[in-house]
Length: 422
Image (cartoon, rainbow, N blue to C red):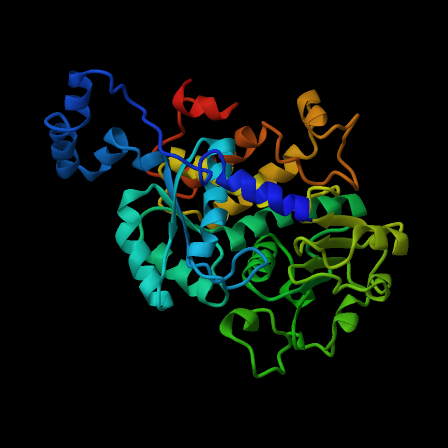
């Protein structure tokens, strides 16, 4: 671990601090170049944009620029360490946007005294961007922050801790249910955790056909049920009449366990209580709710996923957000709606069923990989993700009426370079 710490600190500090820079996209070699870039030439696009605001997408980088914004109240698994401490994570998000989908990012850390102050700040600067990715904001404040910004902004606002996690989880879970010979409508689901990611995961599953009466959400006080009087409005959505009170009760006969909580909280005994072919998504990072070695030793029929890259079936948000924004930006969507999220889920799960290219196998030092218990979600380095997901999201935006542009001529994308015709 000390070696990792040293390497990580060196990586972020050398040879130049940070992980992002601003690059020039136009020539600046001559006096004429500079006259076009700034005064007097810059006055011409200024006049055009003043005449027609949509021309900002033609004459500036707005249409390919996303703000990654945080207040630092829920940084990774580290908690509330403040906005400045969140900056390495926000820069990291920018790296992933650029690396996987060619999306430019400004990371913005907001020192806000209240959720309303945060909302006001983001709303005022939103005109600069084509989209806003909210990150590492604690629940329940994050729900209201996102809701109000979606209402007040005319560009996509997407809280990745909620919806990115939900989209990747849903894709893997639907494939796991298929392999297990089960269906979402009848599946009994236990969700350990009741924060932003957990709530979004369950809401998306309900949108896709899960029965809310079959979902048992468990927080620090036990099962969320209709008899509790300590539930906020977001938890109350999942409260129903049940005599289950503990995690053990909830696991009895359950088909699915989704953990978005903390390490080692699912015991072997509780795994034994689950139905045949149990599906376990233990997504706490870096240490899952149950270690895969223990899960497999306990149940030979378990289908297992974690948030870690060193085990099969990694639930990784990078499978979603870069390509979701790519599709949304390319058709100038005003929001990322439920139809676009479901389209991303279906695209992601369908890709897992396709033959895996040799270059993906080589990247992970694998001889073979095919759809099954240890491959229910595509690998992050699969270059086809931009084709499948961005294409599906763009189509869904158009069909659901939130796109300002038609289907781009350069679609379907084959690579990041296709975005700019390189």
